[in-house]
Amino acid sequence: MERHTTDSPGKRHTLLLYSRLYGMLRWPSLPIAALCGGLWWFAPGVPMLASELAQGCLLVIAGVCGLLFIYAWLGPRFSYIQCHPKYLRVSTPLFRVAISYSRIRTTRPVKFTPGQLPLTQGRMVDPFRGHTLLALELTSYPLNEGTLRRMLTPFMFSDSFKGLQFVVKDWMGLAREIDSYRDNWKMRPR
Image (cartoon, rainbow, N blue to C red):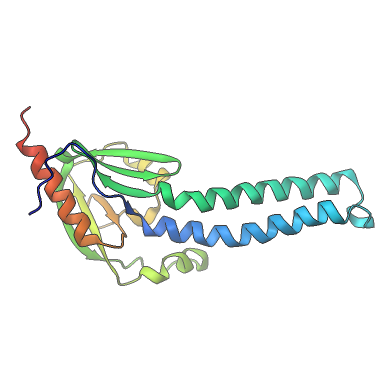
């Protein structure tokens, strides 16, 4: 087993469900922003769009969709799981949580089987159905479970155990890294 002798953080493992979500948001938002911006700029003389209210709405929609595009473009860079010498960090663009290694009971592979879902959620998770993901069984959550469920995607939780599950590209590498950092954490003098 690989030992990490430095106090540096490990590799960032991208959370693929968030990458997929942001990819689904990114491309519709850009053409909508461009279309509304173009209508605002080039069509102020069109009778339906001549009012100040219509012009203001077009500008607001273009701005909001443009900001959504930028957010969805940057979002995957901030959605990851990473080992640190004293804790495991789960990060999303709007939320970060540190999980102490003392809370980790086990890491194990499980199959991703989310069940029957509404169309939009189904489209998001369909590419990952049946894939192996890493389950992190915990003795307790680092925060109130309700808060975690509101701030993280519901697909990170399981009904069969207390903990989190992560869809990442290299689940075996992440499991080895967590075990290595956890072993180093246990051997540190208190």
